[in-house]
Every structure is written in C-alpha cells, then in structure tokens.
Amino acid sequence: MPYETVESGVSPRSRVSETARRLADLSLAANEGDHLGAEVELLERLGVSRPTLRQAAKIVESDRLISVRKGQGGGFFATRPSAADVIRAPARYLRLNGATLMDVHVVTRLIATEAAALAAACKEDGLREALRAHRDALAAITGADDTPESTILQETRLARLLSEMSGNPAIGLFMEIGYTFGREEQSIRFYQQAEDRERSRVLQVQLCDAILAGDPEIARLLMARRTAMIVEWLTKES
Image 1 (cartoon, rainbow, N blue to C red):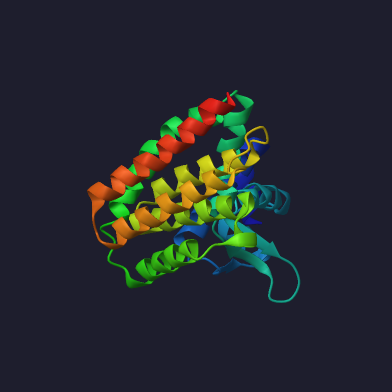
Image 2: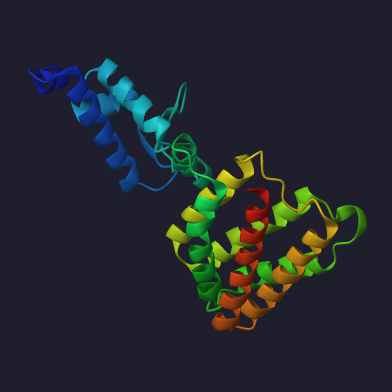
C-alpha cells in the first residue's frame, strides 16, 4: 500500500500533524460544503494509514474546517468556522488570565469607533436597509418590550451590523470577542434602570441616523459617547 511507504521512518505524532495540515489545506482550497472525498480516496491521496487519517480528521474537525459524515453519500466535507467557534478560545484565555470587562472595553471602544466611521461609508443597500430597520425598531420600543435583556440584544445586533458594514472582518472578530466576554461576566448588571435603557436607545438611534446620513465624524462622536457611557457604568460597578 502507498501509505506504508510514506509513513515509514516518521513518528506517529508528526504523521498526524502533517496529515491534519494537508486536510486543512484541502478544505481551504475548496468551497464550503464541497465533498473532499470518501475515506478510501483520501487514504490514497494523502498516502497515510487509516488510524493516521482518522486522528488527523478529529483535529481538523475540531477546528471546524471539515465535517465527516458516515453512510451512503458520506465522506469528508469542507466546512468553515463561525464567529462563535473562533471567539471561544480568546474569550476563555482572557478570563483565565484575569482580564476584566474594563480591560476588554479599553480595546474594543477604539475598534467600535472605527467601525462606526467605516459603516458611514457603506453603500450596500441591503445592509443600510437592515440598519434603518434596526433604528426604527429601537424608536418604537415601549412598555413591556423595554427590558435589560432586550437592550443588550439591541446593542449586540447593532455591533454586528456595524461590523459587517465596516467591511473589515477583523473588526467583527474583536467586537464579537468583547461582547462574548461581557455576556459571560455575571457580576456586571447593565441596563437595570429604565433611564439607562432610554439613554442607550437614544444614542443608538442617533448613531444610526449619522451612519445612514453618511457622516463618519458624527458617527465617531456618537460612538465615543456610547463607549464613555459604558466606562461610566463600569467605574460605578468597580
């Protein structure tokens, strides 16, 4: 068998690592959902043993770059990690190393301000319409719909919209890490007071209006006011 020759004289760990790298490369060269091959085909293509391929597949599958399906029509398929998959490790790293929400906010506030300015230059109709719908929904909130949970959800939706409108995937990644870290911080309780929720909504509506008007400087200013509001609350909590 070809794989018996290729694997001879190489440590098992090295074989698995190299095979995992090659599997990842195959996935990245394909489109999401593409069939990369059945197990027997990949054994021949990669020149490795079945145990090596299966160990390597577990590594690449944990990175969300392939999925392995059994049965008729099964095999190895190209997949892509979601933002949620990517952010778990850095959020956990920050928490294990003693980072506070203020530490994270010091970084993400700068990124958020840049995202707002870039979003103001976005010309994509679909994204602008989504932002307009978000703005109108905010302005219409009253009574029972006004809760801390709904306000946090609105903040997260806006952050994701601005990240997408910025056209910079790095902005989306780092803002998502910040929001994930914040959601997991149980000791901080935002938006418990109705006046705080109203203040947040007013600033969100004004920010949406500035972005829809294509004014990056006003968008920066309003985002800076929003982040200053968060700093004010974090300072009170500390």
